Length: 308
Image (cartoon, rainbow, N blue to C red; front, side):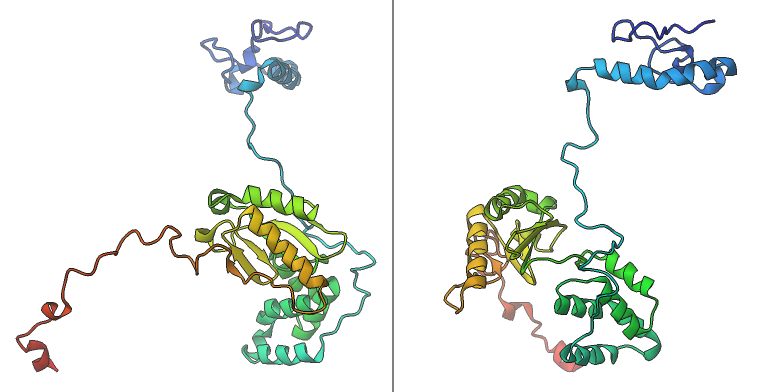
């Protein structure tokens, strides 16, 4: 029996029939059957044509019937998981902790038994990043030397946690939460992302030409009730709107340029009228005084006093 498909004739939705290899015993097209139903000599002839048949059929389908796995754009990580030597970041560049951080390291190591001092790798990496500006390969090697641990173990920690910046960042590290609560809360993080990109002139994963701002997208920052929110260095700003976000960035830029403290930067926390995370619409329950009297809820027969 010869297959019903002829390679010379283009497959369309009207004349397309799958070969016997890909048809069920009830002759219903587009249902796959096990290979054991087809003789081996036919399988060797039909399998090379299968990918071509699938592509031709897919090209004939209307776009309304073609559904992708994801409706959003493809996003990539801001940094490689591996190190690449470059003039500004390679093992030949020296790094040493300053005296102040060495004192802090001594205090940190006192919290761990001597045989487990490698457990302090994360806080000491953080000290190195704060001193150097980012976690370079030289910072990692110095931490490994101080803790007497293999450098590879330090590399594994630094490449696993996204809080360690292995590339230089700007003076203000803008980290916008774009997870589901921030996308749904308030005006939505998408509008905040557009406002930041428009105001700074950069897209996520880039730094401004003056080196003041680095902008990236991050996962949940932990204040979902005050969404949308952004973390700038160690400060969290919540209840954002496009207008308040641009005003915040302007104030930060002016404060970096000003030689005095005349520029007032908004305090961290909600940029709305909320104090913390209370309902912005006011109380919705527990508005009436309690209906019970504490005095009537206590025993008066003296039984409790007798037990004492």
